[in-house]
Every structure is written in C-alpha cells, then in structure tokens.
Length: 512
Image 1: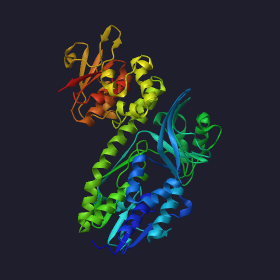
Image 2: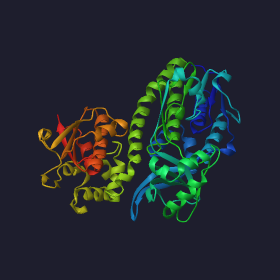
Image 3: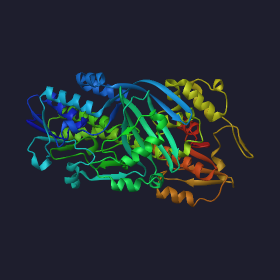
C-alpha cells in the first residue's frame, strides 16, 4: 500500500512514536505532526515504563528505546502503612520525566524525517492526507467532531485524584495512605529523576468535600494549580516527603474518565491512545497504551493492501488487549477507591499480597515466586501461623484452601465448604448476577439483605463475573461483619486462594 501523506494530530508520546514508526516504514511519504502546544510548555511529571512495555518498544524500535532507557530512572516498589513498610526488589521498573520523554521522541521523529509543526491547532477538516492519526488525547477534538462515527462512551469514576510532584527522588516507588481529620488519602509516588518524584494522590468524594476541596476546585482556574490542596497534602504526607514540598503543574482535583469507543476508525481517520481508550493509572499509563497502539497500527498498515484493511486489522488485533487491560484497570480503580477499608485490617505484607492480586492478573503462587519473603509473611498473617509454617509456592494454593476457620461457635476444618451449605437456615444465598461490586445497584442489594450468619454469593461462571463476585464479597464482609462464601468453578482454585488470603472472602464452594 502506498501512502503519500500522513498527518498526526497530537504531539504526545503516542503521536510522536506513531509518526516515527510510520515514517520509517513509509520513507517516501510526507509525515507531518501537528501539536497545538509548544515544546517548552509541556504538562505532567513522571511516566512509568514497566518491563513488558520496554520489551514491546525494543522490538519495535531499539534505537529510541535505548535513548529512553538512558534518560530514565530505575526504582523498586514498596508500600508503607503507618510504621509498617515492605519493599519489593523489582529491577525492571523505570520512570522518565514526561518532558524528557517528549524531547527524546521529538528528536527521533525528526531524525526519521517527520515534520513537527508546533503551536498549530488543526482538526480533521483542515487536513488533506491519505491517513490521519488522531492522537489528540483524552479530550480528543477528533473523537468529539466525529462522535456519530466513533460512538464514544465516557464513564466517570467516583473517587478524585490529582497529579503533583516534589523536588527529590524517593528511594523507591511507594503506595502510602494517610488519615487526617477529614478522612483518608492515598499517594502513588515514584522517582523519575535524580531530583524529582511524581506524587499522585487520591481520595473519596466525602473526604474531598469535608476537607473543603470542592470549594478550592471550583475556585481554581483550569490553567492554574490548586495551591490550597497542595499545602494541605504537603502537611498530610510530610513523612513521605521528608520535609520537601509538593509542586504543581496545572494541578487540580479530577475524576478519572474511562473512555470506550464503538470503533476506532472511520474513513481515513484512526484514533490512537487516550483518544480511543483510557485505563486507570494504577494498572498502566496512557503513555504505554498509546505507544503500543502505534506499534500495532504501523504493523497493520505495513502488512495490508488497502487502508480499510489496515485499519480494520489494527482494531481487530489491538482491541482485545485493550479491552482486557481496561477490565483489569477498572477492577484496580475500584480496589483503590475502597482502599481505606483495608488499612486497619491487614498487616502490610498481607496488604501487598491483596494489592498484587487485586485485579486477577497475578496469582499468589506467581507473586510468591517473585517475592517469596513478602508473600510468605502475608500468607502467614492470613493463616495466623509463623512464617516458617508456610509451604513453598508450589504448594500454596491447596495449603491456603485447607486453613481452618473459627468464627463464634462455627468451626470449619478448611475454607472449602459443601455447596449444600446454602440450604442451612443461617445461610442466605445471594445471586449477584452481573451486578457490579460498587455503585447504586450494589448499594441497594446490600441494604436489602436480611441478617444472616453466612452469605453465599452465586452467579455466572465466567471469570469476570467471578472476580466481581469476590469484590462484592469483600464489600459485604465489611458492611455486615458476617461470614461470606463465594461459589466458583472447581478449576478456579488459584483465584479462590488469592481471594481468601486477601480477605475478599472467608469461604468458597466449588461447582463442577
């Protein structure tokens, strides 16, 4: 397929990377990137690059990845709750300043022959090109102008968050909560340079209102920083900040918006990155998704005979991975929204286990293989035994399922109970169906439940419904104080073990 002209809207990492890849694979084409901002006025702090993302970028373009890695800052991961602290030696986590990353990608795009046009606001209607790549971000003008074609659906989260930074390098990435007189706040923070760290801080709406941030948000123009909130949070997170200040960059409270589109392309226009989809920051950055989109788009165009075939292939190839990540990210977002409920119920090693398994992506045994000491302490806390009593990772699932449970006058020799338990008069069976674990429907279901000694949650057998059932079970445990059992397919023993050790459920029943 011959492309003579390619236009890219948006000079973020996704747009720059797509422009370079497309120019390299179509050297005779004129590739022009339009960015309404100027290089000196970029926004944001650090961008994280996980090991899998690095591998994907290396396969696509080794030269640019080498330059990105050279300008990045490596770090481990940790969690701190009060005086408790646990750290994971990861070795493959990198972060880079957003401005630094853009500088690297701008240079490599220009080296490939891409024309970079800054301080130019363009729309699809202004352009005459064989292919238009709209990488114009979460507020995509292209998606809005062609909404009838793209059919966007944008869902807003319940919690609120803000991005800020500080002028020192944390010793490692850290998840740390604090409780003030108004409620709980959680920081996701990581170093991205020798003298800089990102701080992303989130809270629930009630805490946000009690702290007066509804007023500060309303009174802060979109082009300015909510300094009153930063001053408050700087004091709240003073221990984690080690006396340093928080700095803003158009920093204001926001709700995360999850973007879905019915299709990602129409005619010769294709969406890329946040313009097409978003996934919660706790599971993967928009930068990662956009740059990986660019890889798939370039390969699809290179392999196809026509543009229609190429854009169809791009979406068919890329959408399943994005849909999967969005599903995981939604589950992770809801876990963080409800994080304060867990702060006082689990030691930090068990809380780290719950964090690592929260979205169903990592099993207990996989985590135990990578961080055996942390995992063993977390499992020991669940079972109320010494760390030395916990078996090696290969035997963990059965061992977790076999732990006894005593609650009042009831004793269970293991966590797996017969399905017939649902017939007992003290057990109330709840068909959760497809009800999301959080939201108005879940609130109503929980409020209407009769008192019971044990609630048995049942529902569809697919894995997404099962993971949702465990999230629902955790809510029910906190809301009622009753025992909660979850029914699941017999081949999902690993999911059962993760839920039990993370205190999302007390008991499980298996159905063939």
